[in-house]
Length: 248
Ligand SMILES: Cc1cc2nc3c(=O)[nH]c(=O)nc-3n(C[C@H](O)[C@H](O)[C@H](O)COP(=O)(O)OP(=O)(O)OC[C@H]3O[C@@H](n4cnc5c(N)ncnc54)[C@H](O)[C@@H]3O)c2cc1C
Image 1 (cartoon, protein in one colour):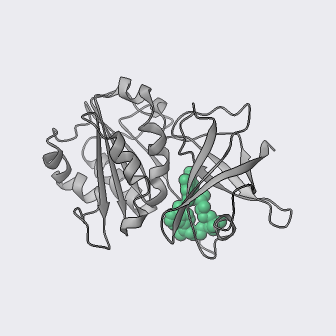
Image 2 (cartoon, protein in one colour):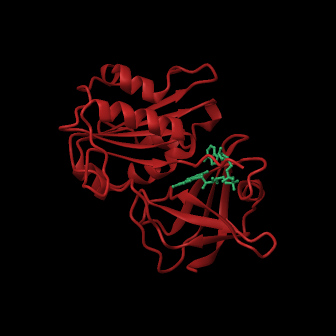
């Protein structure tokens, strides 16, 4: 198994439910920006691992992850207790469908995230290749509470004429209380930013969020002439689940 022990180098708590951690990076570890790996802990010797998108770009010397804290979650109940210097196990086999390979180049690239679904987009918005493939990048991040707007200050500092940032908060007072998916579907997103309505011929969409958001955006796009990338070929939108709902 390609898991290696990596040392936690910093922890940043965003909210009661979310935190980020950085670790050392395995020497030979290569990945595409936007991919995920599995990371884990061995509390009683036995590995408990879960999928995590990589926040840090592939030219960084460290790895960074943005994590949920599920109080009774097998991994995150423990990961939330990890401190600097502790060990996290990182599997250096990266994969995922939120890379530049999964969409054709185009005009505007829409990155639609909810919650920790922001993670892979943090990596992509810092990738120069993304700005070679697209004129503009529009990052829409929807969360329930203001502190869950992880990396807000960093993203605001990166925002430019080529990177638009639209944070939205649904359960606390905030300038934009609508869900990102609703802003997209009603067209308010484009009016507000002064952009042409998203068009499958020119524009591309990447989606990473809760299963409901992924589904509703995918259904909407497919009904409006968009094609999801699949084994049949590269389309104009691509999705990744930010998490899976476990039934037990
Ligand atoms: C492709 C992929 C990439 C992922 N990337 C990330 C990531 O970058 N950061 C991250 O925190 N998680 C990510 N996840 C989810 C992650 O794999 C775990 O589910 C999560 O860390 C919780 O682990 P757990 O063992 O504590 O609880 P689990 O038993 O895995 O989950 C328990 C329940 O918590 C809820 N839940 C799990 N993850 C989330 C989440 N991220 N946001 C909201 N609710 C959640 C679900 O209802 C789930 O049924 C990803 C999942 C997939 C499939």
